[in-house]
Amino acid sequence: MTEGEKRRILPLAKSVVNLIAAGEIIIAPSNALKELLENAIDAGASQVEIMVKDGGLKLLQITDNGTGINKEDLPVLCERFTTSKLVAFDDLREISTYGFRGEALASISHIARLSVITKTEQDECAWKATYKEGELVGGFDDGIKPVAGKTGTILVVEDMFYNVPSRLRALKGANEEYAKILDVVSNYSIHVENVGFNCQRQGSGGLDVMIRKTANRKDRIRSIYGSNIANNLIPVEIDITKKFNGEFGLNKCRGMISNTSFENKKAIQPIFFINNRLVICEPLKRAISSLYSTYLPKGHKPFIYLSLEIRPQNVDVNVHPTKREVRFLNEDEIIEQIVLSIDQLLSRLDSSREFLTQQ
Ligand code: ADP
Ligand code: MG
Picture 1: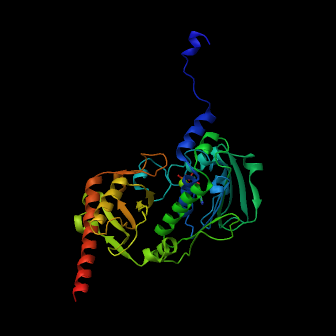
Picture 2: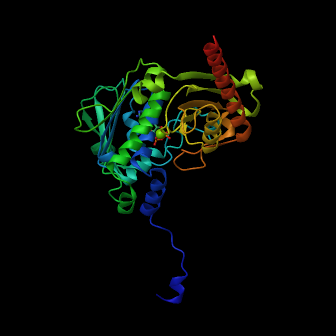
Picture 3: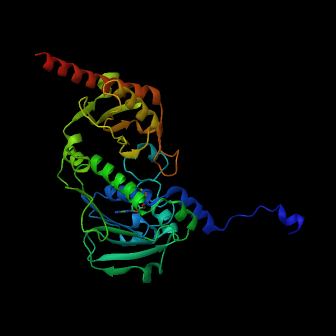
């Protein structure tokens, strides 16, 4: 290499750029599953079925009975930044659906083999298409094949990371990846009512998650976490606007949390949804855990499921490519409002218990 060549700054090949971008969004099969689940829910599905092989690395298949995708839209389905959910940047503030960036399917098509079978109510048959690196294989005329199928969409993701061997090596193994998938499915099936969820490993012969569409929230929690938790729940329904005048942008906080007599020594990851998105919120988790430690015997752990509605303009969902971590304005104040309200709930429980035992 000559001196001159050494200093050259060259653009990366487009395929490499796409692969890097995709790898930031889809870190593991469970990230892909979260995106596909959200799409199914956005499409108005009332039943979602998930089939997994080898922790999602060999196969991840999601079947929904939602609206289906128009045949005319199939050519751009996996193009980056194509979405039916966002028209202007300002819409980002008001967005109520789960997706909005049109990146999920594109990313998946860069790191896996992706095919879709979809049918809208108007279609007479279903259409099947396969994607590679963002593009419809075979083009509109030859790539889209008529097949039998019901209204809705089946997305089939195979051989995830077949072209990213380093990522494959970094993953923990099929069992752990499947556990993460089950967590995502469980959390969404607790949060999203009026939708039925099934999840199974291919060939296992049994369902690991089975939630009927009509199940209420408590039954959903019972089905996933068992009776000990379900029998010790108290509903949380804080109308913040009444209590704190909607100050700081938190409009609502509701959910289910365990009471003060719940005996459990196993840590259970708290489930937080902010504006209907499954998120991780470490500061909220820490604050609630430390509140509970004043009520529970040493070493005992609570169950927490909370769904917050925060003024959409105040939430930044783009801090992390996987959209898993979020930031919102007035974080400290909002956490304080929630902790204060839960504290009141728990102390009321405690005093009524004392009252009962004194009688
Ligand atoms: P986003 O959800 O951010 O719009 P995606 O890449 O996840 O981006 O999906 C692109 C588009 O494909 C969506 O906007 C939607 O119109 C369509 N789509 C994806 N999955 C489904 C589905 N299961 N049912 C109906 N339409 C879907
Ligand atoms: Mg999406």
